[in-house]
Image (cartoon, rainbow, N blue to C red):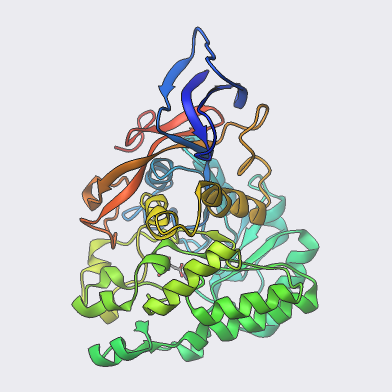
Length: 433
Ligand code: NCD
Ligand code: ZN
């Protein structure tokens, strides 16, 4: 299949060009290209970027296929402009063995809308006691390269130290959900004036920051890399700045919701706003936006966390934490970072594609838009606006905090190895809406 994108601006820069895709690659770039058998897509007014890469997605398969499947989550990813996603290990059964990680990998391939990379668990059953067989998962068909107990923190410092040493010898990455559990027992909201007034049990910033500081030191001593999931506080930003200044191999992601939303959303007690780590204060969100612009926080990750209605539409304390993110991430980044002038489109490519691909060690994603490079791409209409309707999203679940919000920018088309996976709000083939 060949595709010819006419009249498009790469990274939103320079003069428009034509871009020809074929054999999974960018075949030619130039003015007035033509190809007899090509599907032609008008790129006028559109921006071409490398396909987006998400280091933090929950696909719920196996185990909670009533809330999301690899198929529905892949559709959401393609519609959101993603060409690779990392599926977290907190499934049922847990992805702590090569049987599960290779199953997720194969199912992702079968669906074929996005490259699904399984994340392996660090400890057996995410229980934090015994290291999982990371080596076997890394050697499997999926070649697992990222490990995380996400949903839980690897809180025992000795287990974390061993995990970092083991990961280092395997050349894989540990991603930490930074939450000291002794400080968050019963916690449901950010500890601060809002939670006090509303009578919600607080999740202090220090629960995250103490683990970030500790893990930076453990990574330093092990000579290992560590990645911090969903950074949520201004203090975490300061710690990352310090650790990077020391030459420690630490990277971090921030979610779109921690960039845009804050704990004032909790006034309604609507559990759609309940998430881990919790929505913080406006000053934290501002510090995270600045840190992402400056590169102290390396990348955006969605933490797409689908949940069933009965697990969300209930009393706040009983509700599960997490919110949808794949189909809205790009628009939220445009709203919080591009419109205020904190990032240009090249910056968007950096934090949503190039940096996550580099952190995860993918050599076919986040590549330059040049001839001979893999055609994993996203075409964006920067001027479009759209109104979020949970029912219209491809996810099986509907727990979006952005319901009825009008957001800027829309994905026009997504290309995986030169094949269209999503176009004008529809996925290719029989999958999705
Ligand atoms: C995630 C989930 O639902 O699996 N929930 C969340 O609030 N973020 C787990 C996680 O990412 O910690
Ligand atoms: Zn987490």
